[in-house]
Image 1 (cartoon, rainbow, N blue to C red):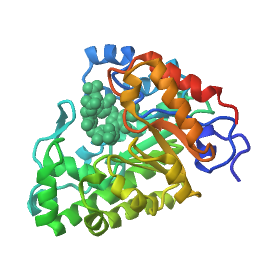
Image 2 (cartoon, rainbow, N blue to C red; image 1 turned 30 degrees about the horizontal axis):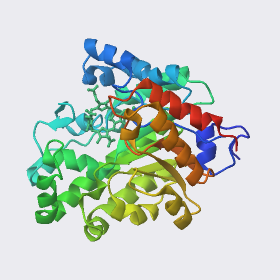
Image 3 (tube, rainbow, N blue to C red; image 1 turned 90 degrees about the vertical axis):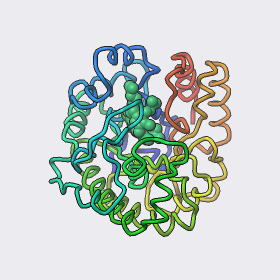
Length: 341
Ligand code: CP3
């Protein structure tokens, strides 16, 4: 039996009645915060994410300013890649030194012991958990196998990832081998995160939408299922986030995850109607927050009015943009907190 007064986020994930909806914000510890920008004057992103004490401090930054219902550990989807022997930098997104383009690239990948997978992130989770109030959830996360493969094969973020899509067409067996390695690595990584105190985990499939549904079914689905089942085996709740893939929403809704997170292109009310047993997360358009407090307040009210409260975690539809005024976040918090269910 779950505790009677468990964290709001976990109660919403279980689709229990809540006094108000939980709220957290993707990229909540980021450049829209002046204190984060100040930290970045002294340290690179890699230094911050690589040092557990600094990472825990950054993780807590947005919570000091806003009464959010979850903290998400400050790291990147690429953080576990050094365990495979992959070298990369940020400019500002990930840039991989030697992109994987052939069988040798996959054979070179190391087989790390579980304790070698981003130990700094595991330590940051432990430090954060110790500092968080009991009512605030702690989220772990990882990149979905396909989204990670996108960076490993393309080498960096690119419009529509043409090298990746060509590789998927020309070398499906190699792609399958790479996705297999990534799904077991991410499964192991998320188990470690849960053991370190993560209350739930989010799997980011930011580039899910690059393939047709038929190619997705063939190439990607089996690996996502493997990853989700590894995590499901220990009972830690799974938030599956897909971005810019309206044609795949129903495919993702059929996967074993407690929560489906979607971007602002997807209509949450229709999603709730089609999948009444599934908790949903999202999905304010991040650009609206850059327009200021008044448009944010209007959009947040509209979201609450149209989306059923049961099983709804309020969030943006993608990461908060660096130019977002703090007043917009305040307005969002105020609207969500003033709802009485
Ligand atoms: O949400 C959070 O606050 C937790 C931390 C977090 C980061 N990256 C920190 C970060 C999370 C959850 C991520 C996930 C991530 N990283 C994704 C999936 C989510 C998404 O945005 O679709 C992806 C695709 C990446 C890869 C990545 N890392 C990109 C594209 C970039 C550049 C982004 C940008 O806005 O410039 C990064 C770097 C990065 N990761 C930053 C942060 C705070 C910016 C670092 C900086 O310059 O300070």
